Length: 49
Image 1 (cartoon, rainbow, N blue to C red):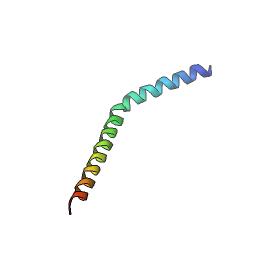
Image 2: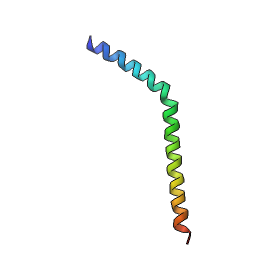
Image 3: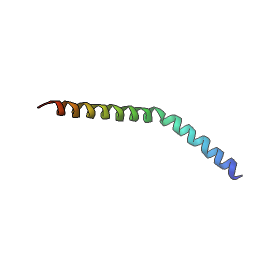
Image 4: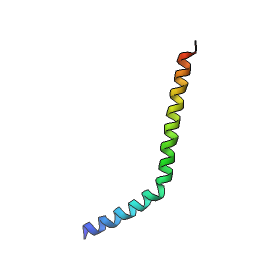
C-alpha cells in the first residue's frame, strides 16, 4: 500500500519536474552567463591600469 502511494507521488513529482524543466534549464543558463560575465569583468578590471 505504502509503496503504491510512493510510486504515485513519484510519478506526480516527475510530471512536475517535466513541467518545470524548461524554467530550471533557463535558470541554469542564466546563472552560467552571469558567472561568465562576472569573470570577464574581473579580467578586464585586472588588465586595466
